[in-house]
Image (cartoon, rainbow, N blue to C red; front, side, top):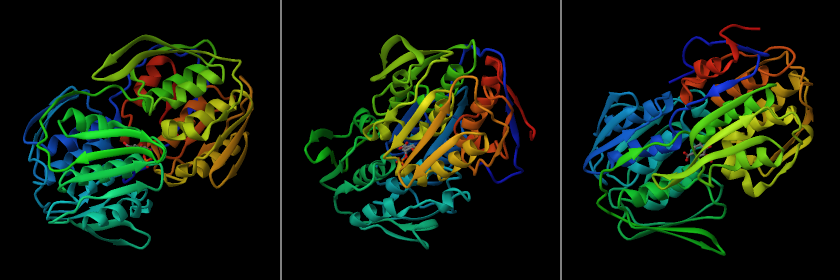
Amino acid sequence: MSGHGTPVPMTSRACGPLTGIAEVPGDKSISHRSLILGAMCVGETRITGLLEGDDVLDTAKAMRAFGATVTDHGGGEWSVQGVGVGAFAEPAGVIDCGNSGTGVRLIMGAMATTGITATFTGDASLCSRPMGRVTDPLALFGTRAVGRDGGRLPMTLVGAANPVPVRYVVPVPSAQVKSAVLLAGLNAPGQTVVIEKEATRDHTERMLAGFGAEIDVEDTDEGRVITLQGQPELQPQQIAVPRDPSSAAFPVCAALIVPGSDVLVPGIGLNPTRAGLFTTLREMGADLTYENERIEGGEPVADLRARYSPDMKGISVPPARAASMIDEYPVLSVVACFATGVTDMQGVRELRVKESDRIDAMAKGLRAAGIEVAEGDDWWQVTGRGAGNVPGGATVESRLDHRIAMAFMVMGMAAHKPVSVDDGSPITTSFPIFEPLMTRLGAQISRSAA
Ligand code: S3P
């Protein structure tokens, strides 16, 4: 877990060209799912390239508490001896998911249709986030939830011992909600149907199929209709976790704004439900190319090459693209400062309920660094100042949010004056090697206030 200890102030200052190879860690979404699905089948699932960030380590701990044997073999190699669908043991203690919305929501789904009770908590950020979006559909299976006011953690879930299958239209674009319902549907008899109006990341669907579940996905006028046959016998898998496009975003964006940079970020998953940022950057005029495009483990993968791009222009990011880059708006807004013209981001209400209210956190920090920002409930606009014209010189609150901290570290690499965050410790939730990796490329990050 992060954010429970002493804050770690960090400062990033203008640096020379960023060059070299940036090997970013494994995908966070796929890492969580590998552990959870591994725990839901009998036998041994082997995982390579697991992200060993705090969020995923908390999920590993949780799977042990539910009865799975989770072993770290070193070097990103892990194994999970699962217990099977519907066979979770009742945990003796409280499940602490730290900072991770994905961890807690997916695990709630996975235990919701077993006859056990579990209590969940997390850090201050996670305890402020809405859980009703998950417990409402889980109630349709017969699960009961008691939490704090506003559906917040800590929260106890009493699983449905005799679950019924569910048909659920997801009211917000959320892969976590979709996935929680699908994982709950695994132990309900008959067919559970989840409908999403906007496509969100589809790792759960792909991985369920890989683990041998009967799952069908159809694009209809109503949206993406996902039909899952309940009570399958999942088969243990060998999983090679691809590198995380959401982590790749940071070295890629840094290279685009730091003069003279040329960075290769190899082996990045380009699943269309995740690659929206890279499309957007290319539309802005970024010198970002895909090299060695290939298919790995059923997912499109490429090596990304990002070079300094002084002529980027602000664009309107289509709302339909939001789900495919939802975690990347903070760092996109930093790139937008170094482009000319306005970057308009619409249809992004979900940013307000992430690890922090990301529109508010970024808008305040960007303004403090000399940037003009306009915002509404579900949109914001950043007026770029062009390459080499960003003042910087701010200290920003990271609000227990790893992506806010990393976005402002990227800004400091190309702004006139250094940029600081009050606490960089949350970075370890998703990108524990961010600092050494960026430093090796040439960044100047120090663990001190400005
Ligand atoms: C995730 C889904 C997204 C994303 C999060 C990871 C997942 O959250 O922001 O970082 O792995 O399913 P929402 O479901 O809240 O959009």
